[in-house]
Length: 510
Image 1 (cartoon, rainbow, N blue to C red):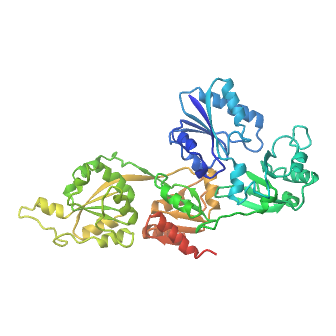
Image 2: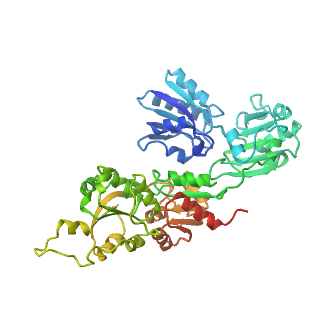
Image 3: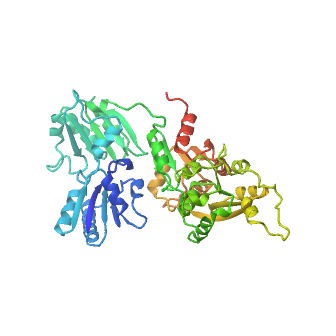
């Protein structure tokens, strides 16, 4: 088979190329570096073998690279799709060339999938164009991590300093003082602007603007990109969007979080996807759900309290004619919109998204709360239908809806449409990103409970961001019971509603 050398870009998963995402989605093996964002790894199938070959401080770099080369050759000889995922671009200070040479020497097929280089993308995210008419007409990308400054194989900083133009230095933080000294010795001005960006394009991004004389005093760690030159004095930021500067943890199931992640990103937020639940089939494999879907005309109403129930139930219907004479109730706008995707219109949607509001919005059963029966004690088919409600629900759910409807005279048939399970474990990188975030969005009580119960790979509890957003009163109540301070409560899972709720809380832009 083929080994694909794929560039993961600078960190933001949105900057992964379309080809890279397509290969990841069908990978059997993913061999990745430590700087690859966890949300990029999430694009791989659950069945993929994930192999972390990231180099750590103290590693013997040469021996480590030889080990990686051998691994790729071994994987490449399997009948499998192998993705070698590297930060930035594989051929820009990523040793991708060495890996490609090893594969070629072993007669293993390989293909390069270029990535967005951090040398250009990270400064751009900081508002720094590496070239600018009238300011810089050349750019040099150099590593500060190869060779010894005093040895012939080291970087010739004197020549680079004299050449002028923009210098973009990768892996240079450890030797930043010596690099600055060499560039000053080459004649660069002590006042020359410098910008240093750590974890560029990710939720952990930090950047410091300084001068060449003070570069040695910058206290950022790796990975960082250093830009030296007049362009570093520019800050060409677009107008701020409503959520610019916010880092937000999204806890919704990964297969449902896409629209919310996109809406938050479009509003300027940096999003950390940390799914706290996984949506799974019902324990019986869905056989009970299929049975009631085939006999749905027995019911007067079908009541939905989640989009998950809609997407599990509706595709089991023969077509829209199966619902002739059956009314539909949705707990809120997101559930209503999920029905609309199947060209179905909800007959009842409460003004406030909550199970209690849904019960209140539904009418009493025909004939009041007393069950009318025939002389022989049985119900006629029409009477049976007129009083019967179908409630597709999660395996674990509150009794608010079925009990409330029974008090209103309805005969409620509950059927498990899906189940949820916690997503564990949480990686140290994910836990660190969540700890650095200022906001977290919880979309159900189970996301709250699972987040508070989750542990990272070291066994430590997750840090709850200072600002908590809850969707629906039930979720907010669960958060408050757990001792969380709910900053924003919205009544709809609609991404626009969530963004609007956070924006209103923040107030007008300065």
